[in-house]
Structure formats: C-alpha cells, structure tokens
Image (cartoon, rainbow, N blue to C red; front, side, top):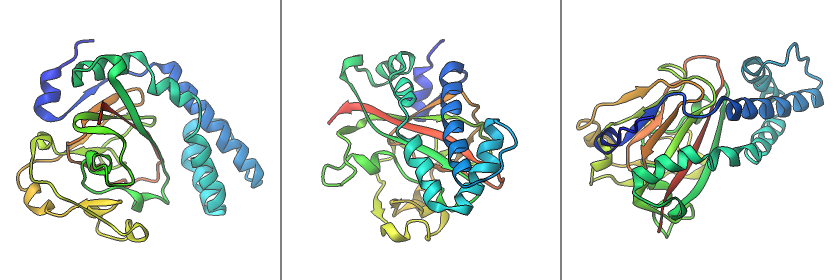
Length: 257
C-alpha cells in the first residue's frame, strides 16, 4: 500500500480501499446479526433467514417500530462488543495514523468511538456540517477527549456500502485550513428539529460564508474501505433517500492534549 500523504495534507482526507480485513468485517456483521436475532426472538418476530443485510434492513426497523427500548438495547450492547477493540487497535490503521500525524505509535491516543445504526426511522438523525474537533477540543466542554485540535483525525469505516443517496460521508475538501469557523450548541432536546445543515449537538454559526469558499464532495465507500479525515475538515452525514440501514463506525485518534 502506497500512502498518499500529500493528498491528505492538501485535501484534509484520504480514502483507502479494501483496508480492513474481511475477517474483522465479517466478525462485526456476525456479532450484530446475533444480537438482532436474539432481540427479534424476544419480541416474537418472524425471522426468515440469517442474512446480515436482511436483518439490518428488514428486521432491525421492525424491532425499533415494535419497541424503542429494544432498539436502544441493540445499539447500546453493540457499541460494547469486544470485536471493536480489534478494529481500534488494528496495527495497519495505527501505522497510517502514525505517519499522517507524525507521531510514534505509543504517542497516539484513541478517543471516543461511535457506532451508527441508522435505519429508515433514523433519517432525521443525520448530522449537519461540523468539524469533529468542535466536539472534543475545548477543555471546558463535557465532550473534551484530550486530543489536540491541530493534530488529530477520525476514521470513517463503513460496514455497509455507502453512495450518494444512502447516507455517504460528505466533506468540504481543503476546509481543514479554514481559520474562521465558529460552532454553537444546539439545545440537546432540539438537536434534530433544526434544519438539516444544523442538526446535531453543535452547528456552524457562519456556515453561509464558508459554503461559498469550498465545494462539497460525497464519498462513496464499500465495506472494508477506510477514510482518514483531519479533525478540522468540515463534514456531515449525506442524505439517505433509501430504506436501507446505514452501518458505520467513527473512531478518533490524535496527539494528547
């Protein structure tokens, strides 16, 4: 694998195809499938086959529709699966991060992990434009993760294939160099009731001016790909106009604060 560091530094992100081993992806799908099946059985839902796509696209939405508590249970338990440690500590990932951030492997810290299980009932939960560093780089904020704003990144790992129209990651290339970005907080209870570009815990106050300076790019990616994104690169969740469930993982790494 040839790492194109120049593209990462110029654009604020880089995608590498077929990066995560099939064994890890398969293991994650198997673990998620088992949790969904067990939960569906507890609700006496009929399961026709043990197929990952069928389970997340057909059975998982039915679970959420029947019981929000059971749906929340699946999300909470899945987020605690030990197999995600294999993903976090995958040596190949850490090696790339070491080169991109110019840190020794033992100097890298891993911070907040996020699992996305967005069914057709969660489309409004898509997050608007923001910098990842806006969540965790201020020591005064509750989400402070001890990562330096100017030497950190996140990885987007799709477990299901993504493309424009089903929730693919959207970026503003080169926006990681923008100096005049100001985040505001949404009221927690209202974070998904605002306009799509402002959804989430935080939003960008001066978004209108910034959007005029940068083009946006929606990144198609397949299961097993990985996207390394500078924590200052503006990004958001792409619109999902399908009834397919989007499953993906964000992991955050960087130099300690």
